[in-house]
Image (cartoon, rainbow, N blue to C red):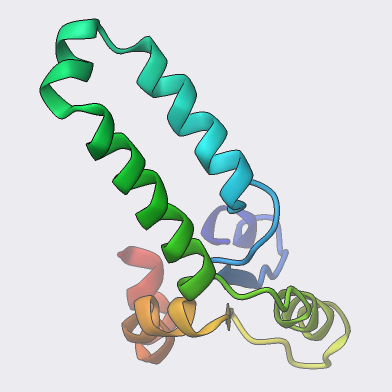
Length: 116
């Protein structure tokens, strides 16, 4: 955003939280975890144990279910507003977690958030 200002372009940032799409999908995460688990040396796998891996995978699945929003339209609405509004915002937060994590920056003056 700051770099494009030099060229006279205004940029809006859509900071989204976790949504059930793409890489934030239980199947994709579990497949990647299994791939990483299988790449470990037998000594390391033994030190953690198979039970650890199974429990960790269950916890990941539960987290995705509990924390990830399935309504991707929240992101699309932010993008739509940024594109067609007469006065688009500098920052958009889509999803409760994005609003929580970026709360300070959303209230800070843009010159301060740009510096940070």
